[in-house]
Image (cartoon, rainbow, N blue to C red):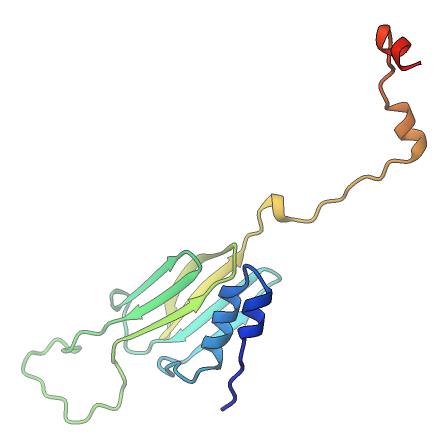
Amino acid sequence: MRTYDLTPFYRSTVGFDRLFSLLDQATSDGSPGYPPYNIERTGENAYRITVAVSGFGKDDLAIVAKENTLTIKGDKAANENGKAKSEVLYRGIAARAFERSFQLADHVVVKNASLENGLLHVDLEREIPEAKKPRSIPIATSAQGSQQQPVIEGSAAKAAA
């Protein structure tokens, strides 16, 4: 596996430390593979995270959005079929507890979540504040600029002359 030394970037940049720490995390092989998930772009500023959570019900799942992190947790009760005396001879269906975290960009908010056919869909949208959106700046010509200058009257005009 390749490792990259990002130390020179830490020395010459200010405010990008979060980005570089995300790059460090992305290159490590420590990310778990359960449960599998997809990240889709559904529009210009809309996204969807789909997590395969077969066997988990609505009450077994928790979705928490805090700051720029979205965390999806699943915790299945040990006795899933409700029978106290049942004994599982072979367990091929994975129903273990999990926690999956996603780093969200600035201004990305969770719109809704739905559970259907064993898939948890979390819809996200980037809501750019009005102050951050590009705006058009009118360009004044020199003729317009001279007409808008205030006229100096009275003693201030005589002192300037």
